[in-house]
Picture 1 (cartoon, rainbow, N blue to C red):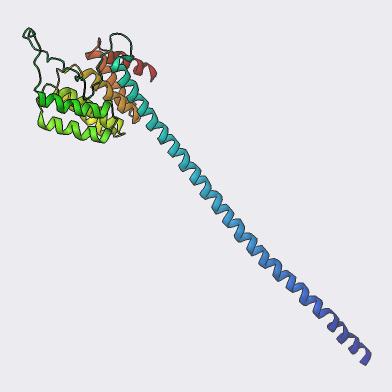
Picture 2: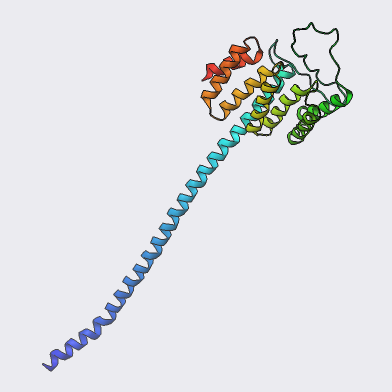
Length: 245
């Protein structure tokens, strides 16, 4: 009996350190599993954040491409008016402080045209020339916007008022302010109904609707332009836009 008890005690003394070692290993493994789980959670969070950043980058690239497209449209329109388009398109000669600005087209009336068109006062011509040069030559769009606004405030009924209203819309367009551009193009159509720039302004309204994804409104404007000004160069562009929908 005494021998058995001694053997049992000896066995306990032998196995107890091994059991402690085993439980220690299990505890270490559990700690490592917790660390691995936390790292996995962080990796998943980083991957989700990376996907969100990738989506934002794609959105920014799309917006940048839209801005570039709008800028290209502006330059194409300007080149067309400067004489880079097909024969028969409306031309606007570039001006600088050393050159004469474009002459405003005469208003349509029932009276026969005068032998010589009226000449704008020197002050009006100089102010218009300065604003036009800021837009077309220097490409300083915010400064051009301020200059055209000041011109229209000083000469709301002047010989260059309709031209200034149109180029004010173009300046806002070039500055990526589509709503501001549309506002001034609409103002030209409503306030200067006899201006030869009305068809171009109507086209720009439709074009801006198209850029904003408002295709139904764009179609309606383009069709109205074709119906009311069928012989204008702007109507030809509108026909091309209608065919692209």
